[in-house]
Image (cartoon, rainbow, N blue to C red; front, side, top):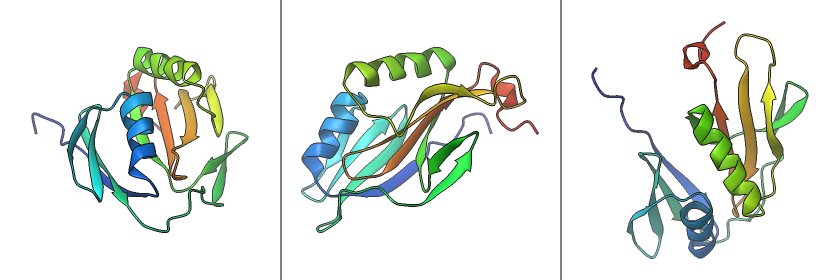
Length: 142
């Protein structure tokens, strides 16, 4: 395979305007096609689609899993970015006043799998993780 496949994810939101503000303005995802019920966003070349679900509570899940001394929200989605892009996104989110579930930090320091990570919720309570490895060859290392 010469080109990595693009990822597609559809997820529920309680309000399309707040999804546009979060994904489009704060995260900087260009908007693609849309309808009154959904909006496509380009998340670093991957297609994510915010689907309006009437009555969806704008609240995060209560499910968490302990990882490196933090309670990681489950389920979650996100991206593995290049290190400099991860730092720039963390700065952008901080500058935009975004609250974090887990503040940007380096986990598993000094171990195989050392990575920068941060977790946040979108306005509809969907959990996102953005991470980066200084050495991407260690993404799947044991």
